[in-house]
Image: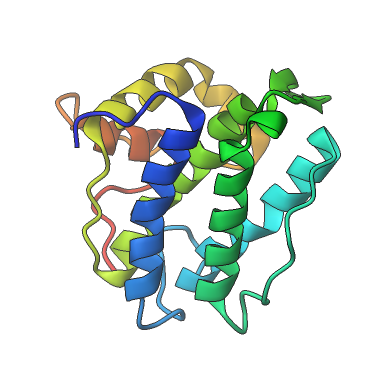
Length: 190
């Protein structure tokens, strides 16, 4: 890949299609992941767990409730991925304002892109690495995200949402630099 689309709906579509393919190919939801203490199903549980409340509180948008991740990780993920894509494809809702006391005001589609689609992108590596799928991420997107996040490394760690930075060689790939920044060991294996 040589860069993801810049428009939020198209970027979400590309990122979630890749994640969905890995979800559909996952045979064991009980395998360890690069996130300490998380199993494969926990990656999906995280993504379908935090985002609906974040969206509801910031934009008064309610996503449909699906099956529990414990019972049906594929179904839970696919329902949310489709619902978010419909939201992004709807011109009447994407321009709405998303407000959060910690992040300020954003257009709804931009907030989804910045906070959620980026999270799905990064967790794609976690699920792929855990399940033996192709874990390569778009290099241009990794470089873009690293450039935006690296100046905030201390803030990211203090948020509790990222692990301690993992050192990587100076000549590491953009993907490995991003992974190290968010607390992942690029050499982790199940």
